[in-house]
Length: 157
Image 1 (spheres, helix red, strand yellow):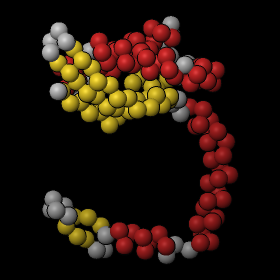
Image 2: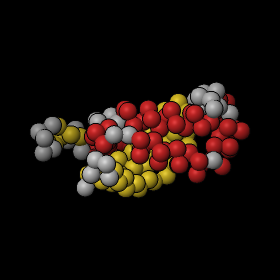
Image 3: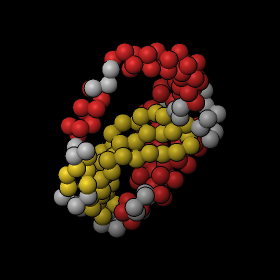
């Protein structure tokens, strides 16, 4: 076993050793294992696909928020996904995909309603709650369960 130290002083296995172990496994045994797992996991994989959380990608947001009363301007950039509840079905999903522009408008309204200090919170909890409330109010049901914000950048100007 080959070990090397990374810059933090932690021991790390060499990728070459791991790759050699994978390549040296006989193809016959791998093929038999793959055939056995595909036969047993086929019915389960169909049910797992139905149980996976459904999400809707609302895309990239670039918002420049001017607040003349407080003399603040904020530039925000983020990507957003909505996780649907387990009660949603395929009809709900297709309807929400058609309503993406409405959902995006609710997100923009929620961002403009938030205080500037909400953008600096570590988990963005208040902003995510505002978006969740606005989208569920528009849908008139509790279809959206969670809001995921990724690649969030905030720059006050």
